[in-house]
Picture 1 (cartoon, chains in turn blue, brown):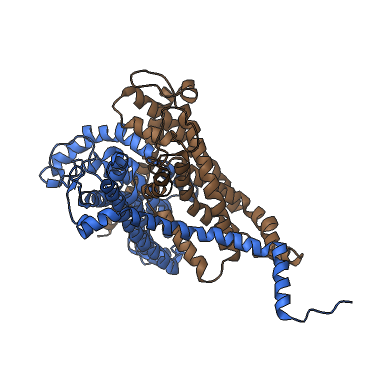
Picture 2 (spheres, chains in turn green, cyan):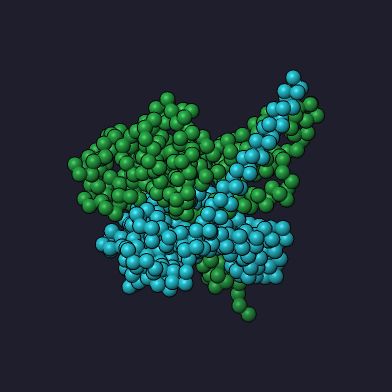
Length: 321
Length: 277
């Protein structure tokens, strides 16, 4: 006959030992470490960018993001031409992709039969899986010639007096990069917007229709506003992707480190200048400047992603549950 | 007035249809143009031979295909265990504030542009080793895999009914045993499909490889040496001024896209089946 354990600490120890034998504690710790590795990686990433850009951060300070000179020979670096390129390409790509994406999302959620809608959405989501280098390849050999022979002459004919469509067009340009980006982000806008539109309660539609609204009025004045925050969220997610997109942009943007008013002129985005010049950066200051550009890009995408996430989360309160 | 409203109704609704046709049309143009060009320039040599110097036609990208395979193997070895186990933690053990912080960080890391991940891998692996390597490229891709692997695992484990866990526990199984023998097997199809999608996504990544695995015109001589990879080859060949290289780029694009889309279609069909069951 053995006496029951009396000392509490000892029973705790044996309980822990039993759990350890059963693997519970071990499984807990192992999975915890793996989950925590996310923190480690993210912190290391920020630390690496911060440390790597120390040289230029000390040398130029805030002037780095205010100066528009990028002269590797004189080692004078400023981020403005690239921030300009990134913002302009992303903005123009949204101008093209938002109306088309929203239109298609409305069609898929309000008009098409569920089976057709599901099939088309499946196909459109495949577009999102196409690697960006493939978009770049098609951009160079398919899109640029089409723009050169048909689209740009037409644009110049109508809007030629505007400074943004002035100057010669050599194929590679801010405009070409924007069009490629638009094609790349449209699947995101469609797939997320369709989800939030489908989540709008049927009562809303029936109420509007019973008041005598047409199908379009119901959709545009009732359903879309109801889902608006989710739609904005999808646009911000698409924007975050456009801002960081590298390869497709690099292949068609023209790689010129100057700020030019015309969309038809070649330019450079933050991501494309890093992709283009990192391997040929010879001096430490040059590399540091490129890493600091990476830091700027990181900061921008974090902010945009954060905003998108908050928007989608707050929509979740109204739609979806 | 009513007539005008009806006309607006008709016009706008048709426009939404036009938008859809346009987007789906773009998909078919992309696929059609790429497959037409790619199939024309694809040959057996592409899979078996090394790239030829400029001006010499023929040759292939055997080294890049093997290189991509090695990079993806490394990426899987890094990304899948961390993502999978981290996902198990979030779904099965996570309570309190820490798991939501992990989730937030995961989404944040997922949103980091791939070129920035490239800089990270450069700083962590290439700079200390003083040379470009397969290892650095594989690490960059592995880091990119973790967030999605983690969130898919969590999502599918959460989809397993609570009653299954309770049943196992009631039979006397420990928590770890329940997770390993009941919960994970119930969700394994979804998790595996998610991992395949994740792998297909990084298989096409180019930016993180530019200054990590760099590229190589010959066979890579080891894991610590630079290696060629299909996406990087497509990039360098497409922006080159040589027609021969453009043809090779099309063939490489064809192979890469066919693989990526095949994995996507299969994985998505499996997922659609499991979610209806």
